[in-house]
Amino acid sequence: MAKLKFHKVAAVAVLIATAAWVLTGEFSSVGSAASEDGAKPSEAPVKAAAPMRTVAVVTPPRADHARAIRISGFTDADKRAVLATRAPGIVEELPVKLGQRVKAGDLIVKLEAEGKEATVETARQLLAQREAEATAARRLNQQGSAPKLQLDTVLSALAAARSQLEAAVADLERNTVKAPFDGVIDKVDVELGSSAQAGAPVATLLNLDPILARGEISERDLGYVKAGDAASVRLVDGTEVEGAIRHVSRDATSATRTFRVEVAIPNPNGAVPAGMTAEITLRAAPVPAIILPRSVVTLSGEGDLGIRAVDPDNKVVFYPIDLVDDTAGGLILAGIPDDARIIVAGQELISEGDTVTPVEADAATINKLVSEATGSTQ
Image (cartoon, rainbow, N blue to C red; front, side, top):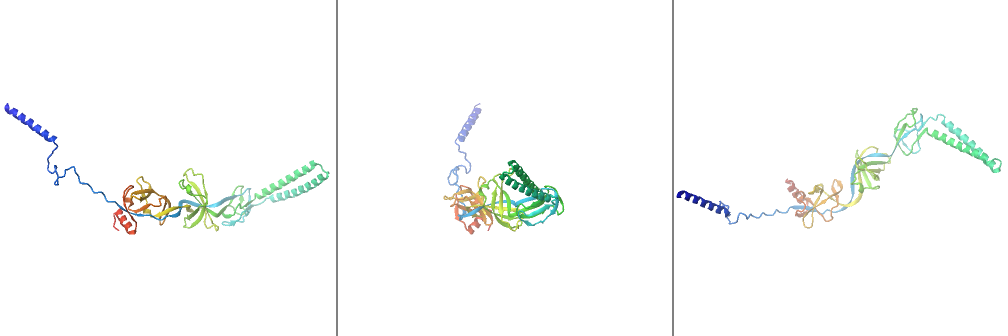
């Protein structure tokens, strides 16, 4: 019994000793209590700071550039008229042919008169008679030999004869079709001796000087253009012509929310036809701008298109771009501060707010930085 009590006392003692050891926090294991140099485990070595990146920068010169707005369009005649008869009849005269140039008032088609000329002549003779009667009636009335009522009757007959002649002449003129403006005959719909109904088309007349280039611009670009601004047009066959904006619509197309633009182009020889596909470049007022290579353009953290630059503290800043023109030599940009040091190489490896080491760009530096950015060897 004494032996059993001894074992119980020993077990309790071991348990108390183990609990005391745990509470001290001293877990002895190889290499855990101290390092070889005596440093405590909690004291981790300090990590070295990452070196600043080097970027190539330029401060490009500024010059005035005209903003270029390019739109697709087509050429069209300045004036277009489908000429039609105003009375039925047989085509008696057809003095024009396809491609012929005509002046305003030139005869295009004449229908057979069918007695209308005789009607005009009769009305003319009647008018002459009524004029003679009116002259005699006035003389008699002045002499007191004819009453006022008789003079009024004669004058009324004179007015009726004059109206009758005008109606006869108008009816005869309905048998002729004349050019309303200078132009070129683009289509002839009748033949000599053929029958034409009233309102039937007989010819199409175009005025191609000036020729128009029509297109539509977006809401965003509307404020940059106005009537009188210069414009250039490149036709589908490669021909390039110059003109000026003649009209900018103030009413948007409901389907596209765009605005119609017309460019007038001198075309004295009719060399530019109507209906050709064209690329229209509208030139707005010049603005101060710089030219940079396309590779400079990047995206900000928010996804905006622009360029990165270095401020006076060598920190990276971002400027949204205002594209003035896209030329073979690079992008022409506006809206960038005058003293901005623009990053032209290394901009893809940094972010806004980073501190960098800027160096003036030269060919060697740019090649080196581009090589580092792409992971290739130059």
